[in-house]
Image 1 (cartoon, rainbow, N blue to C red):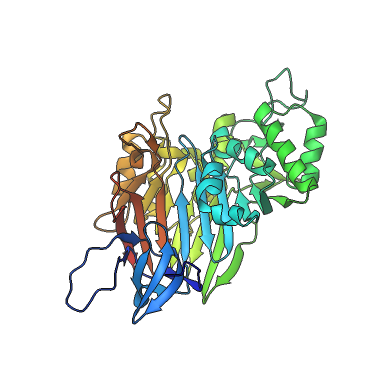
Image 2: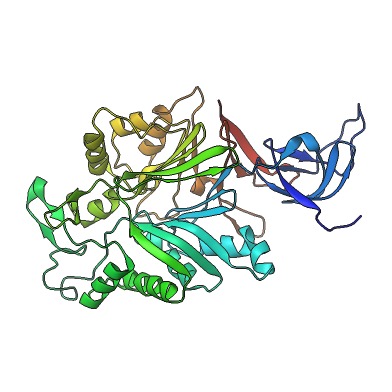
Length: 431
């Protein structure tokens, strides 16, 4: 049998069965493989109502009714340990939201997801990159990706809040490690922000970056100079949504936060939330993904103060309602019940790791995520809980898969034992 691929399609049902041989009518046969909705299948041969396919896992025969030309929307919540890292695919568009604190995202992109591109001597192009905020566990892993010549990038969106060194090393007029603030108490604002490549260069010339942010700055500037990064851009609630069609369905990424103010100079300024940590976390990018009838909310590291700030801004409107939500701040206890009620998802994904000083995810965060969800059986996923150790003592990282065709949503994680059906998957909604 020839191994050359004639054309390709995608699985059109969830856990589509792959068989070693074509079943005859009335025969009972066990599948040698099951693949998730949207999984690529390369077709090498067809017979009767079946295709012989090359795909993830064992190759074999698949029913023609179980494939289509539409990939749908795929989201991979990658286990990066303590941090966030999310890969989004829709059609030919590739999107990265945060990159964790380590090499997990890069290793997954280059060692698994896009090896087919690298093997063909092609670049991995990320059309959009979103850094929710500049905490180590969200952006440090991006530095090596930016420095890797195998990657090219479209626009990198960020929240505009830089990181500076300790008091003795940063510019004298910067009264915090985020820059300069004005005002007091409830009317205190951070006014040091950046938007473009030019702004970043200007901040660098002034000096005083925290070490990791300095490395990130250099990586951004080098990638831009080398023609691998088109631009960087500050995003706030006022930024226009990213919109395009995939097949016959609309896809958009809307910006719900951060909610900034504009000062007399026409520049963005951010409300100060108690301290540096709450401020930079609280002004995370808040992204609302919409694909046909399905919505996903990505919330960065929002906290109680920032959630109240967002709700106050939107007043009686509720743009936060979503079918699936990424849990705020790795399952921290710093959340607001009213905000959870507004989100009210069918499923929540918590991205956390073995960092005992934080003890994420917290028991109250897990319980509240379930209690304030929709549906009779709400789902709460955790990359940390999905992780396991095999018999050889190797870590099997706990990625959470989301697949949707715009009507149905399926979510899955890998089973610990290797078998034909490796997926523990659930129907989240069927609209």
